[in-house]
Length: 254
Ligand SMILES: Cc1cc2nc3c(=O)[nH]c(=O)nc-3n(C[C@H](O)[C@H](O)[C@H](O)COP(=O)(O)OP(=O)(O)OC[C@H]3O[C@@H](n4cnc5c(N)ncnc54)[C@H](O)[C@@H]3O)c2cc1C
Image 1: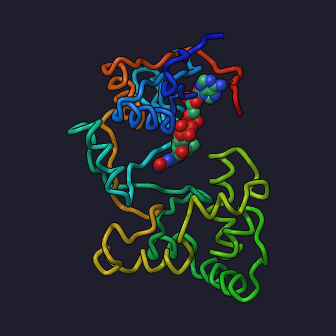
Image 2: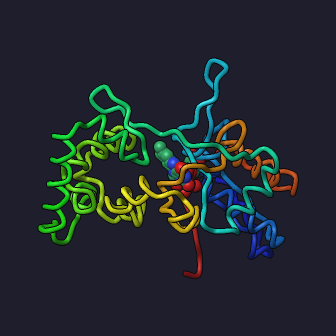
């Protein structure tokens, strides 16, 4: 096993994994002149689940990533690493349900036309029921989203999509996790978003993150950001060690 520390160098930091968290930490450390070694088990690529893969001459993100933050510091970091390579793009996200495309964020007219008056009424009744009799102490993603949107909308917009993306039944995903991913979002917020222009909603910064209409995106995919950070680390004398897996951590003195 490699010993990446030397007895005198108490501040040599070893980072496990070259995903966004590890690379961001390593980059920040090098800015503070702390020697750092990033160890990544993937033999070819950095970026973790935010990497971009090439297949038959096309590039694919492992998951579709939006670059939008309410933190100026994070936005500045993306600009610093990517410069002109990060651009603003208009969002087009749609959910295919019963053979029809539903805009996400939901647009009232599109949802009404696709669902029809009967299903729309069912969704509203189901939402009213959820407000009157919410699941007390919601434990799963299903409980949490049903409380925020009503069970009917949960089934239409969230259940199948979430299970496809994450591969786990919504009854097994935790309510905490749902609250973090779709923080501040509920049916009232979605309707407000569908009806009011951004200026009346307090501008882009006031918008719930998952509802933004435009966001920034690196020219060649989300992974470009992490390749950029890895290149900067290499230029500073700390290349990512690809194809090396951390199998144990030994520590002394507590
Ligand atoms: C479909 C989808 C869409 C998403 N959309 C967004 C979005 O729009 N905006 C957003 O901010 N986030 C989004 N995310 C979340 C984002 O991808 C993750 O939060 C982020 O990648 C987590 O970074 P991480 O470094 O903690 O972990 P990971 O990305 O999982 O990286 C961990 C790295 O550690 C390596 N590793 C693991 N074990 C070892 C070991 N023992 N030794 C060495 N290396 C090891 C792995 O190979 C990997 O490279 C999305 C995720 C998915 C799946």
